[in-house]
Structure formats: C-alpha cells, structure tokens
Image 1: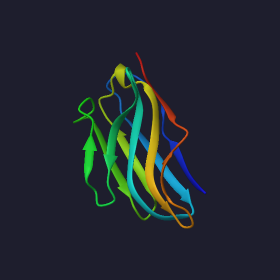
Image 2: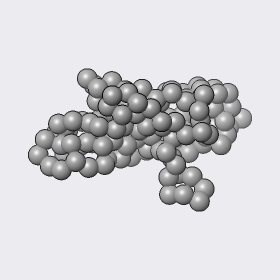
Image 3: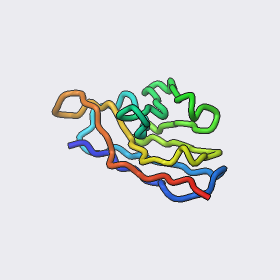
Image 4: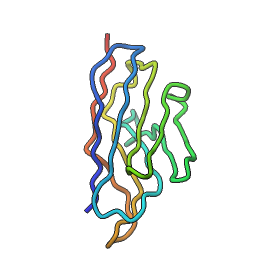
Length: 120
C-alpha cells in the first residue's frame, strides 16, 4: 500500500506565506513525478506545480513567481512554498505522485487534501 499525507494548510491574510508538505510512505520502489493540484472553475482540477524525479519543474501561470515546488527524494517528500498569497488561491490542495510500488504496477496516487484559505 502507498499513502500520501499532506500537512501545512491553514487560514491567513492576503500577502502571507505558507508551506505545504507531502510525504509518501508504504511499499515504494520508486517515485517519478510529484506535484500539487487544486479544484478550478470549469475543470476537474488545475495543476499548480509539478516536479520530476530529476528536478524539472512546471508551475501554473497563475502562481508563477509566487509558488515554488521542491522535493527530497531521500525522504519521499514534496514541498510547496506559497508566497504572496491571494484570495483566489483559496482551495483544497491535493498532493499527487507517480509511484512504482514494490509489488504492484506504477500508479498515480493522491493525498486527502489540505485546506488553504486566504481571506482578510
């Protein structure tokens, strides 16, 4: 079994900063991409940021220059540093990862989500 657990959500004022963390655990052989997404109007979910195992990054235009994604391969974790937060960033943020498990196929996994609320 593979599990993703997020932490770091909260309530803060516009302009503030927050860091989200996500740890993968279980029967993991290898983790390929890791990332974060959130619900979006007219879409099922919007990709916020993505990072490959080698460190290649892709960040949504709506958060470019404000959000930074990083990962620690030794700890199977991915971080999302969120700066200059805006009310429109309010959402449940879901961690995701492309994982090859020890005994099963390669699959996409999601965490349970962590709420970020930006409001004055």
